[in-house]
Amino acid sequence: MVILTGKTLTLEEVERVVFRNEPVTLADQALAGVQANRKTIEAMLDNKQTMYGINTGFGKFSDVIIEDKDLDDLQLNLIHSHASGVGEPFSDKISRAMLLLRANALLQGYSGVRPSLIHQLIYFVNTGIHPVVPEQGSLGASGDLAPLSHLALALLGEGEVFYKGSRVDAMDALTAENIAPLTLKAKEGLALINGTQAMTAVGVITYLEMEKLLRQSEQIAAMTLEGLHGIIDAFDGDLHKVRGHQEQVDVAERIRLMLEDSRLTTRQGEQRMQDAYSLRCIPQVLGASWQTVHYACEKLEIEINAVTDNPLIFSEENKVISGGNFHGQPIAFAMDFLKLGIAEAANIAERRIERLVNPQLSDLPAFLSPNPGLESGAMIMQYSAASLVSENKILAHPASVDSIPSSANQEDHVSMGTIAARHALQMLGNARRVIAIELICAMQAVEYRGVEKMASATRTLYEAARKVVPSITKDRVFATDIEKLTEWLKYNGEAERANESENRSGTGV
Image 1 (tube, helix red, strand yellow):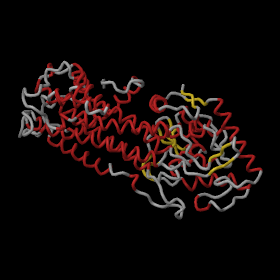
Image 2 (cartoon, rainbow, N blue to C red; image 1 turned 60 degrees about the vertical axis):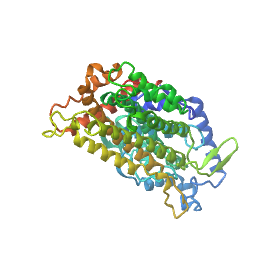
Image 3 (cartoon, rainbow, N blue to C red; image 1 turned 90 degrees about the horizontal axis):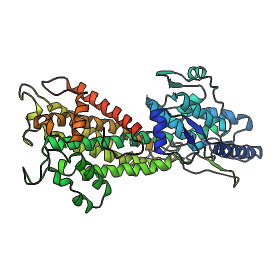
Image 4 (cartoon, helix red, strand yellow; image 1 turned 60 degrees about the horizontal axis):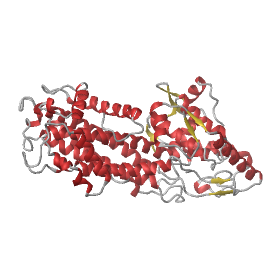
């Protein structure tokens, strides 16, 4: 059971709720603070105090005063008008994370909502009702208005949800679970949608999957080293310690340990003095990719416990302040930085694929073909990897450097953080296919070298992956193999998260 307090949520807890469906409950003390904060809003309304988005219009309409009788309609109109997202829906996991993160933010007690609204969000989490939220349409300031409006619609019994494996009308799911639709009161519509929970949810999912992808990249790179008789000296601990980057030191150590009992690696001078950079510089490149992951982790850990709506109500000081905590720039930068780490992990993997298949770069059979000439082997798999890497280079362009004014130039600088997060997740899928192709090629290469000479760790990976994709004995439709292995890597990533939530530097697949 994960207990939300508004201030103590961890990425590990998000992982448990999103991937393992662990139930969620709300801390009583936090709910008491939410109730007190709501009473502050109601008292201010009774005193006819003018407050943005509570008894005024929104954005460019902030100077329009709303009559008391229309305050509830103002919030409903906001949700209806702002539910303008387009494109394919986010996955149910991302939708689930959005529910959790929005509840946690509101639970801090600065947003002026009733406890019943937060309970509704958690009902959805615990019963597996996941709003259908279109991916596109957010500028990342004022927060994720369009995506969160679609999430809010479902709470009201409107729109669609994913429920028990089907896409259904939200009201049908609410009826099935005996949950009454929410009715919005003053401030509550704005509190639901004025935040960064869409970009942050996508960012968290991407971060969790990126951790696994990098560990798998290290394991597969180790097998490639065996397939190419790589020089193990380049992973010597003393060499990496003098550089000073801990992530680089850690990658070198993990690969060194994976290959400690291998009879396929070589020492400098045995066959050649130095390997190509795609082999020799694995710790330097993947270590730097780990740095982007650690930066993203730091910012996401802050953001999942952040108050990001507007205005905020400070009950003890009896004040309402309009500000810009909804601006997604910190997450936009983090996701754009993470994209570089994803791009380069795939980029260097594709160069290793080339070394495995190119007869001018190794003594392996041309394109790892069992019958070169008559059969093309892995030739076009390398094409696919190159195409994915090139696409990632385009997606790696920073979304955060762009800004388009909106709301009649009232909102004249925006973050594009949700675009950055979406592109990072898309790039991750591309990168996973690239390392799947590397694994197919590396397995074929070690078969030529002698599987019995492999290290214990890489042999375990080889035997598990061979149950998914058989050896290449003749040409076949390799697209099927790539997709099977890609799904296997993703599935095993989720399985390992369930088993290794406290140890994210393990070497097992």
